[in-house]
Image 1 (cartoon, rainbow, N blue to C red):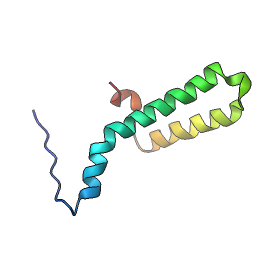
Image 2 (image 1 turned 180 degrees about the horizontal axis):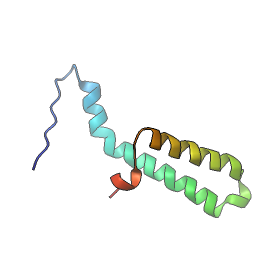
Image 3 (image 1 turned 30 degrees about the vertical axis):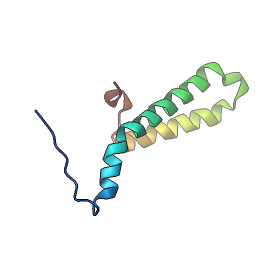
Image 4 (image 1 turned 120 degrees about the horizontal axis):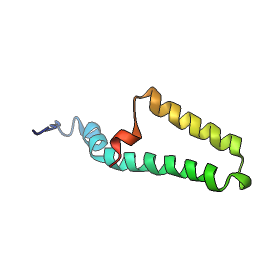
Length: 75
């Protein structure tokens, strides 16, 4: 089974770039999720935990609102 994406360049250049950078963007999201988790787990005594928890909650809510499950997308 194959999936082939076609773009009419240069008219759809933005769409082409978005598709080609999606894996990189996913990596950034995954790293940020892990960073938030690690800050809460290992540096809680040094940081404003409430602010970090709010960041984590907002990040998770944004993913949920857009039906993005990083665990399903990460290999």
